[in-house]
Length: 206
Ligand SMILES: C[S@@+](CC[C@H](N)C(=O)[O-])C[C@H]1O[C@@H](n2cnc3c(N)ncnc32)[C@H](O)[C@@H]1O
Image (tube, rainbow, N blue to C red; front, side):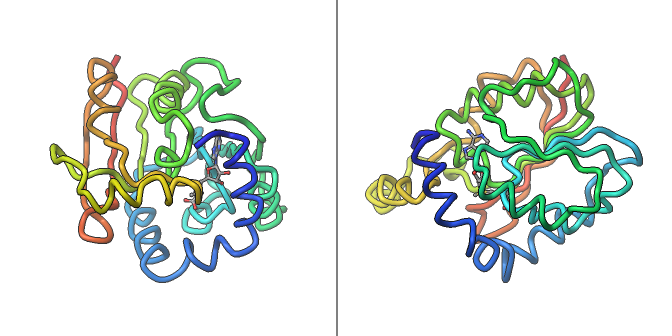
């Protein structure tokens, strides 16, 4: 996967994205996650890879200081059109090289982005850089099963699915192990499709 290809894929997919990823089991899971999020009024929240803005529909967005970034102008345009009257700041930006100052945000929301960006390690490192001390990253995504080798079927499917702009074989544990001095895992729950999708909360401790 690379940024150029992702831009094409998400341009094509932008018009029907919500029909797949903001209905059914995805909708149910998003609602459940955001019912329980620990945001507090006026906090600075960054949504990384906001896409069509699906997550924003389930939070009290007028109450927070929200910035939302995405690399695809087409996905971003849909998100913007849904929240025209809000104060949400929508920016076209590469999640692997953000232009924010260090320690800018109280929370970072990362739904279905670490499995999509070309380099998930860089993206995760950037999220940690722009997060305030004691701030949290809320991750909803699919990852390879913990401490297990990827199955042969997944190995075969992985390159084909990558062409559609997402990776089914990434390991959260690999990402976390490179950053474990700076982070603490608060939650790690299976939320969808037999645990393939997880909801993970990490706190920046250093
Ligand atoms: C699977 S969608 C997830 C969208 C949204 N977070 C959601 O939960 O529905 C992945 C999003 O990541 C964006 N994306 C891909 N590469 C990116 C990058 N390098 N920087 C920022 N966004 C990127 C895509 O344009 C797309 O909108």
